[in-house]
Amino acid sequence: MRLLAPTFTGFVLFVLWAYAIVDVLATEPRRVRRLPKLVWGVVVLAVFGVGAIAWLALGRPRNASWRPGGVRDRVPRRFIGPEDQPDWEPPLRPRPPDRTRRAHPAAGPADAESEETTEMFEAWEAQLADYETELGPDDDATA
Image (cartoon, rainbow, N blue to C red):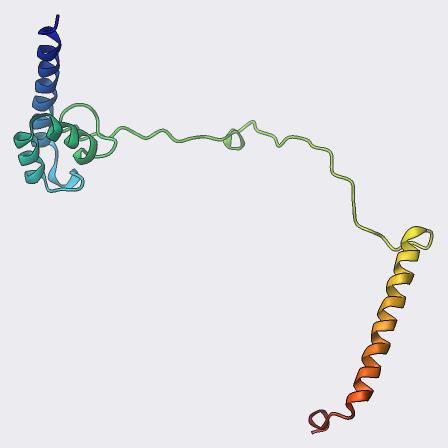
């Protein structure tokens, strides 16, 4: 049993290596990724298992068929969301309540807040006017 595992692994690596060699030779040079086709051929031939795996992972054309040198690309699947379906309708959701304040004569507590705010702004304007009189006239403003 111990002899069978290395033999089987070697056989799988040899088949993978042979497939990679045929695939490198059959692939069009303009479709090879990352390195030129000749360099990939040397890498696959020189580095037995790792070169074949590197070719399959890094050098093969994207979306190529599994037939060695396959010129017809596999069409990548396009995700279609539910809103792209012809019978899709948006979900009906209740509208959230309107949370904006509206000025209304019978508003109640909002009137008290607006009176406080008005008094506060009037006090600030008075302080600003007092500060401006302390500074005196601005010579640059008249020019």
